[in-house]
Structure formats: C-alpha cells, structure tokens
Length: 345
Image 1 (spheres, helix red, strand yellow):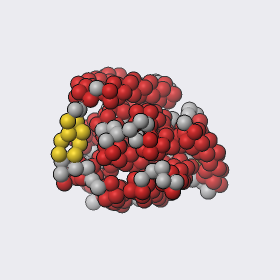
Image 2 (image 1 turned 45 degrees about the vertical axis):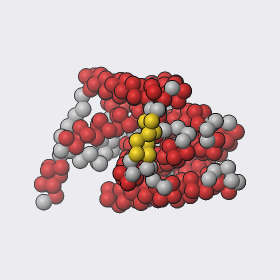
Image 3 (image 1 turned 135 degrees about the horizontal axis):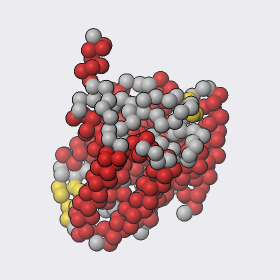
C-alpha cells in the first residue's frame, strides 16, 4: 500500500533526526535492571512514529477517508499517551500518574467510539452493556502497558506492531477500507523505525513510542469491532505472543509479591536472550509466529465458528512455549514489596 510505504519512508527519515536530537540533549537509555544492552543508547525515537502516525491520521480524517469519531479517538488519546511517555522518558513519572493518563486516554476513546456494548464471538454476539465499556477500558490500558513491557529487546515492539497492523489492514480491507488505511499507516510507521532499532539498535522508541503503539492498536481493534469489520478477539489472536508473555509474567510477579511495575528482566523473551539467544533470533522467531497467527486469523475470518478452537489452541501453545522457556531459564525472584517498604521505613 502507498500509505504504508509513505509512512515507512517518513518515519525512517524522522528517526534519524530524532536520534541526532537525543544525542544532542543526552537523552539516553542507561542500562538498568530491565536492560539487555550494555552501553547507553539514544531513546525517544518513538517521536518519529508518533509524528508520522498522528499527522497521517489527521490527513485521513481531514480528507474524509476516516470517520471523524475514529480520527478524534486516535488523535486525542494517542497524543496524551505519547506525551506522558515522553515525560516519563525524561524524568520517570510516578506509576499513578502514568496510569491516570492511560485511563483518561482509554475513556476518551470509548467516549468517541460509544463503548463496547456487544462483542462478536464466533458466529454470534454477546451483549455486554455497560460492562463492555469497563472491559474495553481495562483492555486499552493493558494494551498500552503490554507494548511497553515487551519493548525490551531490539526490534521487538516495532516488529510486532508492523506484523499485527499490516496483517489487520489486509484482513479488514474489504469490510472497512478506512480502518485498513489507518492500520496500514500505523504498520508503516513501525516498519520505518525498524531499521534503526534492529540489532544493534541505534535508537530506542522509549515509552513515547511503545505506549502510543499499544493505544493505537487497541483503539483500531475497538473501532473494527464497532464497524463489524474484524472482531476484537481476532485482533487478540494476532497480538497473542505479546499478550501471553506479558500477562503470564505480570501475574506471576504479583503472585510472588513483587513490584510488578518496576524494571525487571523476567519476561520470557528477555530470558531467552539471557539463555544465549540473540536479539535478532528472538525477535525473528516471534515475528515468524505472528505470520502463522495471521494465517489462522484469515481462516477465522472466513469461518467464524473456528474462533473458539483456534483461540484455545493458540493459548495452549503460548503457555507451552512459556513453560519451555521457564525450563530453559527459570524466572529469578525480584524485589518484594514488603522488602521495599521496610527499607523505606
């Protein structure tokens, strides 16, 4: 698609400029408890992704190719999430501040898209009523943070967004060409960032880009569900690798009484790198799985009755893969909440 190509080229060029600015202002990602890099790397490259995606979205909306409500939902909440991410990249905002902004962005999107009153499940629908809006709010906030959590090795978050967004654009092109254009734009922006972020990464997207991409994908999924183009659960199928790794890991950390929101290296993809896999190998393997998930999503779109069995099979596969990583490189206990509290007292 021309939109994808234009977005990729624009992001590729702007990322180079963002890198120069990051170096000039010493905006560097220093190695910490979560890092898998040994030297400081410029960050804030997500600004290029944000600028191209927001400008492209505004252009699509202004030309009448994207509905006003969807355009405003993407622009307003996306700008808020990116802005908070930018501030967090510079001065590490409190968790409560970030979550409040993410919640506000989610409510903004739901307000413009009229919530999620029904959910397509296979060949039928489930009426959710007000609970649908609650569920969608949690899902959007979670998507923002999942993408941030999974942006821990070179090329992974940009590669995931590229494959998910472009696959979705292909699948919904016939039913909702407007949303397909927005997805193609988002995928193209992520694709243009990828050459700068592939191993060895010359710049990181930071919270500015990762949270923004998570928000954008979540809102596109919600708009797609509302338009009857592609169900949210099929979007979840495409996003299964990120959702499974982040969700299982965070649940385990909470269960063990750890500070789940602090920097760590406990995700399965991080532990694969610690076990000896290269960044490129881990990212490449996940992207190959995403291609297979795209094929499954295509089959589900053709035969909605397959949704339940396919989701169950993919979920089982994700759990099995997680267990194999656990066997290869077990999760190491992190700092417990009580220990931190005692230290503070």
